[in-house]
Image 1 (cartoon, rainbow, N blue to C red):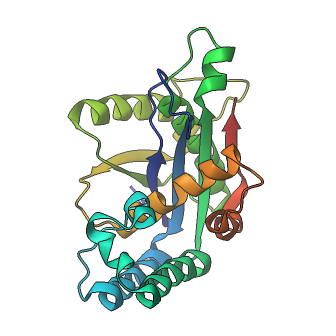
Image 2 (tube, rainbow, N blue to C red):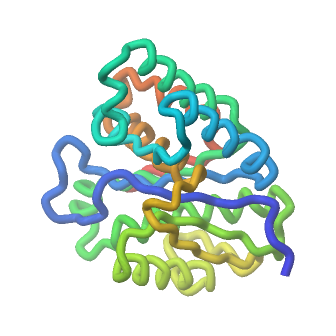
Length: 244
């Protein structure tokens, strides 16, 4: 089996639970980073490593958008030195802007979903379906027909991972149809990988950084959102799906 020249990393922002949505962020966002393996090992990983060494002297720091934004936990050091904080944020923005990867994202408005459908699919399942559709299209365009592509998720727990993997396998076996499109996912071989939260995967950390800014742009489109303006140029063609 020939492996794909690309790898995919996925992470989410917001809760997939439909009941009692957070009024400040009533969305579920699933973001995918599609990157060539050569760009990943030659550029993305070493640049993130260098950023961490410069910021705290070692590379065991795991980037979490929420903790960076709140300057808490491992990122409490951002509160201490303004210049260090500015350099760290600028370093992240530079890596995201320069690195050769594409972003695909699905944003599910949970309030509208419940209002429109009597028995809606899970927001996670919907978002995953939309993201995999676009990934299939892009990977075929990139000449990966017939190859095995690995999709890396951050593990959320044994039960949650088992449920997600089951739906993932149903989608890529063409057993979970949605809407009018009838794409043939079997043109690729798909493999889901669930990584521990402490795995320090550079790709998962990139995916973590992109999901919330995309959701905020959908939620409050006129609000200043510098993170999204950087990501806008990384979006794959028609790579952002908002539903419903």
